[in-house]
Length: 331
Image (cartoon, rainbow, N blue to C red):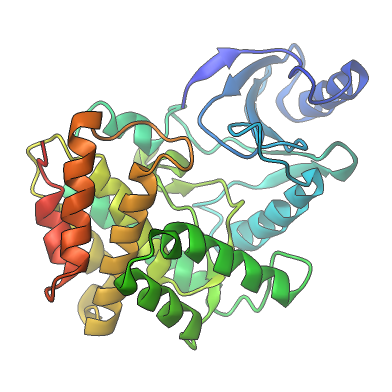
């Protein structure tokens, strides 16, 4: 989570609108605000605003993705994330930020700053390996979130078909685009699951924090109705990728996470297969560079890692077990 001193974002809004936002922010954090842009996001423009009393996060959505300028988007879609935040903060207030103010006319919202050390978990993983205890905390927190929102009975987009389209879009990017029969079958299985509830959709280390003895999660652009095992496999893939060049037993990390998430009930064979295939598809998705993301493996090793993931998908063994071994110390 890199911060850079920043004033008005060029081309995003008029000087008048920016000054107006700064006045609104000052009402929440105190006068004499300083603004630092937070790098790393691909959709919205995100800033930390520091005043005399506190800090807050300012999020603005433009007509193009912040990290992928060629990608056109509807700025009004920020209202969907505001809706998601209201649901998730209401269900798990110790984990998600609170929206302090939403200004739809400016496509902007101000929310509480929940990353107490101003770093996300990805920043820490770039410096050192994960610890099994951290994965246990993450697993327990994610289960809390899934349980708290299981009966939310709400959607974050204008109608149910929009949520279904977003789910299908996510599965296309993460699983179907690779064309592998096992991933196509997993995508179809996820769509058939009777338990469709709100899931986070983009639970990656860059969107969470473990600082200050708490688990905090943010960036709910991708919240949609889906099957919770998608979040489980998606996060585990990112954890594995961050340890490709480190002498860490990935199986210890994976087991710590799954034991905490499932508790004494354990994971069913069907769910274990889904988690493994989602993790494999996510690894291929991140390695493809489709969406800007910090390089997790040197170019000369990327082909070998991709080949190993595809080999696992084509075998008859449990994919998640193979991934834990194959991606640990892959260099």
